[in-house]
Length: 195
Image (cartoon, rainbow, N blue to C red; front, side, top):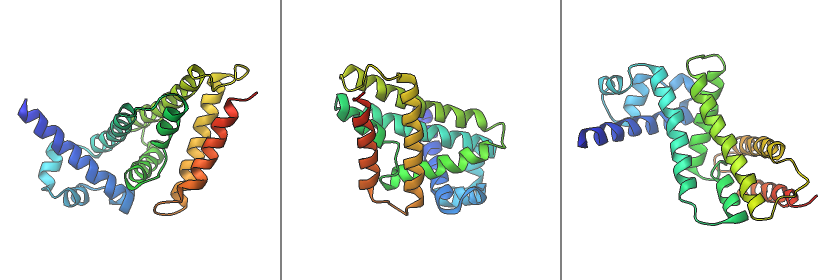
């Protein structure tokens, strides 16, 4: 068992280094040599952990999902406060979330032409969809979602808004001013409670 923990820790360190390389150098920089240097390990060690670039890229997408899922699972509020906190995990409001989003976008674009990577990118996208559906369900249970609205449609609309806010946040600079993003999201959630 301790051996497995070492392997998992090594793989997570490699994937974390890969996310940093993707953020700094883009897909062109995501090479065995570049990631090994960033992780501070020998290229041969990286190749033993991830025999192909595809395996490394797929693991990066899984790592992003795992990290966001862990943050969401640790949230303690309920009702609207929980929805606010849940959705904030999907926006580039700090270095960690920005790193994840840049890597997700880079690998997501690659998955449009890389059929092997596409299923992993779709799984991550579906996880975001589930988060939006969960947010609508939480609002419904808290009495903060209008009965006249279609929950499925509103979850899709929430996802589209989140994607737009997130991309705008990436284009706004290293760490964008969170105020406008949070205000737009809060206003949308407020409107969901009304007719």
